[in-house]
Structure formats: structure tokens, C-alpha cells
Image (tube, rainbow, N blue to C red):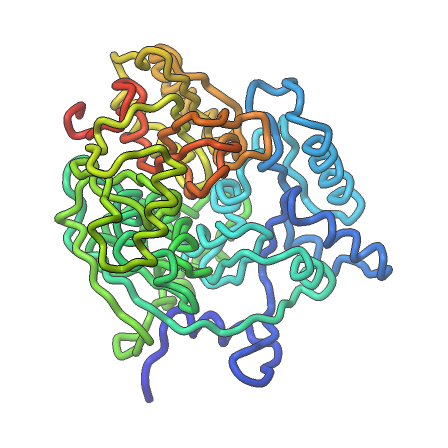
Length: 467
């Protein structure tokens, strides 16, 4: 009998009922609730006079719409305030744990889930946000869902889903100096395309994975959605267990020992057969930056803006031409000569303590260049407090950054941190489509240390020259 993949093992443990084809009714262990996707789901409970089946399996936090300037700053607009107020009211009404904006546990939903121990290996976890794939770093099946699906989870603690095919991405060779996991995932997406993972649950494995921290693994799985896959996973190991031990919602005592024993078996069998398997050499990578309007349109910082006129694929050439027109870039321009106006360090991709430390190492003793405006936004209140305990905020402030409270901030133009039309931003976030950070804004994706390098030079720069 053929062995099973990690994805298949967890999936089969959660099937409530099979349907025709690859569809199943799946039990949901964890549900993270935020202000954007939940109003319709809560309204569905009210309209149908249904109770919320398991309030203890849900946590609510507002992150997209909250202002990140020191608390008390007004919301960007009335709608943003209404969304946050409605989430708080619904959480209280239905008995769901709520992380208030002024509390020490507030933060971006995909940051607080892991740091509280709500995210655990072997579970199924959902949220009304596409970057829920982040949590797969802990060896669980985690994916984003829509508002109607949120309503199903509220009412039944189940959801109908299609079983994905499986892909294993073997990352081998380790990371060269100046290269981070953000460079790995950007380079991988550039290689396989934004549709390369469509229909697949991706498991990351290999020697490079073994050397990654949990923060780095979360960054990797977070951006799996940008490769077209809804599920990114890493098998749990000692790194995972060390991160989770002692977290507020993690098992304790004898239950912890039993949990670790069970989690230690959560790995793909040696003879498991994946539907697709690729190997990606990370040892040859250079720091990456995106130049277009999808993460796929990315290249090494030592490269140049591509010329669509030299491409034989007419469809690809047309897409690149459109992207360059929006980004106001000329083919042949060296990427390290592109000047910037703004810098954003934060998001559910790169707003953790490790990310802030990496940026601070570049910023220490340096100043933000000229008219560049830069903000650093911790992914959670806990991250902010830990960073301040280390004095990282003093490095950011001395360099000329604004130091903010937790929230999604400039990752998405749903709050008061937005690009003005025509502004160009070095960003540690996850998406760079037209208008993502503000109407007419131009986004270049990169790692935190690359964003810090851009801040002090005023242009896209090779961080290796500053380290």
C-alpha cells in the first residue's frame, strides 16, 4: 500500500462525510474571525435564528481596518470604524473570545493565531482571509474561506471542500548571505508562476526548510497563496514544538507530552507519492525585488527591468507591457536604480520580531534618505512589546521611521496608511497588484532587510552592500 502525504493524513482525519468526486464535508478545529469577512456570516446566524455551534473554537480580532498610529488616532473613514465596532459587538453577542485594539494580544489575525498557541499541528484552521495559508507552517491544513463558508463554520463547525492534489517543493542548499526566506518564495513564484500551485496543496521540505525558524516558515507558507495554492504546509518538528511550548492556548503538562507524541507522527510517509514534485536550489539565490504587478514579476536586485519586445510569448509580453506602464518603468533599467518614495515594514508576511530585528541590523547607525517616508508596523502588540524591550524601536526612530501599533496597515488600502497616486513603495507585504496599497500606488515586494536598505539609500538596493 502506498504511503500517505501529510496533507492526506490530516484531511482523512477530518472528513465528516464524503460527497461525489473529491468533495468532502470537513470538520473545522479552529476559526479565526476578523472584521472584513464576518459581518455577513454573523447576520446569517441572526436571520436563520441559529446559535453559534462552538464559540470556544473561534477567536475574533480586527486588523485590516484599524489605524496603526498610536491608539486614539481616528479611523480612516466611518466604514472602517463600523466594521471594527460590529465585530466587537458580534463577538460579545455570540460568546467568542475577542482581542481588543488596546489589548496586549491585539494584532494581525495570522500573527496572533500562532503566538497564542491557537494554531496547532494536525488541525484544520480557516479564516475569511486568503493568507490563512500562513498557519500551515505548523503542520496543519489552513486555508482562506468566503463569507458564506464562515457562516457554515459558525453554524455547524464544518465546511464543504474539494480535496486538493498534492505537490512537494524540495528547497535545497541553504540560504546565502543576505538572502532570506522572502527571497526564496518570491524567486519560487517567479519560477513556477502565480498559477503554478493551482489545485495543489503544497508541502515544503528539504535541507533549507530544516534550517528555518518558525517565523521564516510562516512567511513561506503565507505567500503560498500567491503561487495559486490555498494550502502551504511544513511538517512539524522540534523547531515547531519549541515555538509552541508555553503558549497561552497550547496544551500543558501531560496533555503537552501526549500532543507532541502525536504531532511527531505528522509527516509524509517515505513512500508517499505526490501528484507533482519539484526541487528548487536556494543556494544560488540573490536578494529579490518585484518590478511588476504580480509576485511572479520578480527578479534579482542585480538584474534589469525586462523588455517585452524581446519575448516570443505574446500573451506574456502583453502582460508585462501593461505592468510596466502602470509601474512607470522602462525596459533595461537596472533594478537597483529605481528610486522610491515610501517604505513599509510589516504585514502578516513580515511583521514578526525576527523581521524587525533583520531590518534594524541594516538601519542601525543610518538614516532614512531624503524625502522617503518610512513606517514600521509590528504584526501584534506582543511583537511590539518584545521589540521595544530589545530597544529595536529606538533604532527605527533614530533612523527616521515612524513606529506604529499593530495592524495590517499599508499592506492593504483599507485603513489610513495608503500610498498616494504615483508613489513608489518598498514593501515587505505580499501583494503588488494595481492599487493594492492605494489607488495608483506602485509596490515593490522584498524582504525586511531589503526594505531597510531601500529606506537608507532612497532606491531599490542590494542589502549585501550594507551588511
